[in-house]
Length: 302
Ligand code: GLU
Image (tube, rainbow, N blue to C red; front, side, top):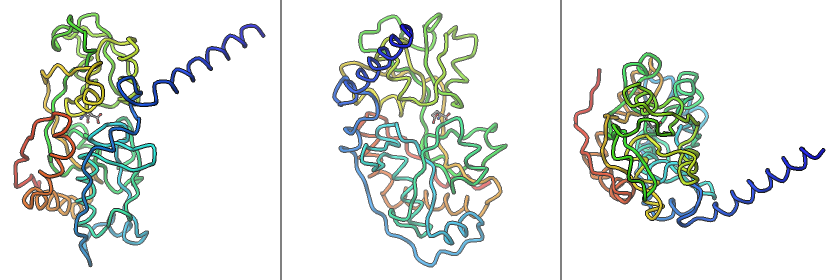
């Protein structure tokens, strides 16, 4: 009985701490309302009468809704406000593609898909396609198709502002580094040459909370993601800005749906050419300090 009471009191303390930090500002838990409010959201002309030999698109047209997988806790990239609104660079890319496929924003159903379930979610058809800091690589290509790359990031390190001992990936020996199950930066940082002790969680925002709470010494993932967290808490966090991998972002889709892949490829190219892409970048990723990396067009078609 005594033990139970103690456990309950502990739970209350944790809940209170969570409430206290969820109110935003410098001490806010990642996922507060602030990030979504200051980023650009665009609308794009919606194509009509789109006909494609794509089983995925046909299903979406029948249900009159496009289901797009996205991230929800990456400020300036793929973020969901407490009121449910989605913002960020990846969300804009998703909306541009949707418009070219004939779907307005109110005909999109975004579904949050974490890194470790992306392949399953796409290959099982739980989403029509996925846009969320998704690195194109050969391993993943065995299970899913990719259109792109539409942006290139690189794995980097997020540390507390007063950190002096971690200066780059070669200074991680014995350090606690948090990353995400199913992500490429986690695979990289687990290599024995770094000597890091990893904490492996499902969401990046959980890693950031652990970093602020000093349970880990660093968080690793793409610089584009980390800069979003640092921009929200500039007095507490910093990105080392020493990228040590290349992470080309693609739109993930059903491996066999060649027509959809081509249509998404052409949509991305069109919005790069007409300036929508740059505008979206400037209003989202550009605000958190990520460099403009002009995508190479034409994009690969094979
Ligand atoms: N771009 C990396 C990946 O696809 C890390 C970001 C993420 O987990 O979404 O694994």
